[in-house]
Amino acid sequence: MHPSPRTLSPGHSKASAVFRVTAGNFLEQFDFFLFGFYATQIANVFFPAASEFASLMMTFAVFGAGFLMRPLGAIILGAYIDDVGRRKGLIVTLSIMASGTILIAFVPGYATIGLLAPALVLVGRLLQGFSAGAELGGVSVYLAEMATPGRKGFFTSWQSASQQVAIVVAAALGFALNQSLDATAIAAWGWRVPFFVGCMIVPFIFMLRRNLEETQEFKARQHRPSMNEVFRTLVQNWGVVIAGMMLVAMTTASFYLITVYAPTFGKTVLHLSTADSLLVTLCVAISNFVWLPIGGALSDKIGRRPLLAGMTLLAIATAYPALSLLAHAPSFLNMLLVLLWLSFMYGIYNGAMVVALTEVMPVQVRVAGFSLAYSLATAVFGGFTPAISTALIHMTGDKAAPGYWMSFAAACALLATFALYRRRATTLNPAH
Image (cartoon, rainbow, N blue to C red; front, side):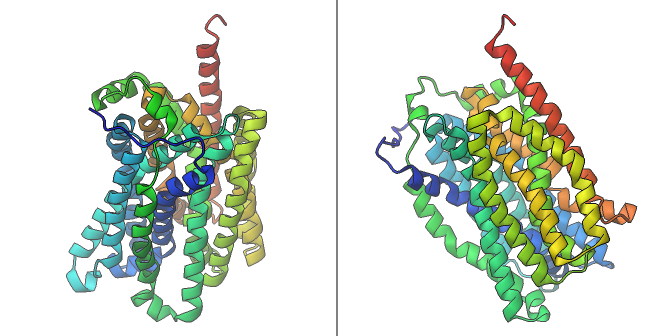
C-alpha cells in the first residue's frame, strides 16, 4: 500500500523544484571534495605511516572505499526509490549521507583513540558511499521527469551543476582558511572547519527536501514494481547497466581528476602553492558550472550521441598531451589553462550524458538502473582516480601519467555510446 504522494503542480516553480532536489547533491560533493583536498592533513591525523606516499595512499584508499559501497546503495536504495517515490526516497538518502558527514567531522585523531580513529572514518565514508549510490540517480531521474518537454537535457544537467557550486564553496572556504591560519593550525584542527560547516547546513537541506513534491510522471504510473521486481529487471537488463557504466566512465574519471585530485596534484606533484592549487580548482568548478547546462541544452538541440562521441574523441586525443605540457612547464597559468580545457570536455560531455543515461534505462527501474550504472563507474573509474593517478606517477615517474587514465575512460565511454545507441535504434525500429 503506497501513501498518496504530494504532486508537482503545473504552477509550481520549476526553479524552486530544481533547487530543492539538488541541495542534497551539494552536500555530497562538498564533503567528497573536502576529503580529497585535505587528504594530506587527514593522512597525518588518521593514517600515520613511515612514508608520505604510504600515508597518502591509505587515505585515498579509504576515500575510494566509499565508492565501493555505491553499487550496493544503488541497488537497495535505488529499488526503494523506484518503489515508494522520488521524494520519500531522497529524504532517506539524505539522512544516511548526513550521518556519515557528521561522523567524519567529529572523530578524534589516531593520537587520541588509536585504530578506532581510521575505523570510524572508514565507517563514515561507507555511509556516505551507500547513500550517494542512489542520490545521483534519484535526483537525475526527478529532474528528467519534471522537465519541460524538449528541455530534458538542460534540466537534468543541473544535477551535476549543483555539485560544482559545492566545489566553489569548499574551495573558497579552503582558500580563506589558508589565508587566515598557518600550516600548523590547519594540520592540527583547521581542516575540520569546512566539515563543521557541512554539518551546520544539514538541517537547512532537510527542510528543503521535506517540502519537495512528487513528480507527475511517477504519480501517473499504474504499476510500481516491488523491490524484488526491480532486482529481477536489473538482472534481465545487465547489458544496459554495464554499457551505462562505461558511458559514465568519462564523466567520473575526468571529474575526480580535475576537482578532487587537482589540488593534491598541484601541491605534491607540480609543487605549486596551496593557494594557487585552490584558485585553479575554484576556477575549474565555475567553468564546469557554465559548461554543464550548455552541454545539456546542446543535447536537446542536436542530439545526445554527437556530443558524447565528439567529446570522448577529443579527450582521447588531447588529455595526455595537455597534462604533459603542464608537467613540463608547471605554473599557475598553465595549470589553469590545462584544467579549463579538461573542464570544457567534461562539462559538455556530462551535460549530454546524464540525460542520455535516464533515457536508455527501462522506465520501471529508471532510478535503480541509472544509480547502479553510475555507481559502478564511480567505483571502478572515479573514486579511485586519485589513488590510481598517484600510483601511476609513482610507478612511471611521468607526472602526466593521469592523462593515460582519462584517455582510457574516454575510450570506454566512446564504445558504450555506439553500443547503447545502436541498441536503442534497434529497439525503436525492430524491422531494421
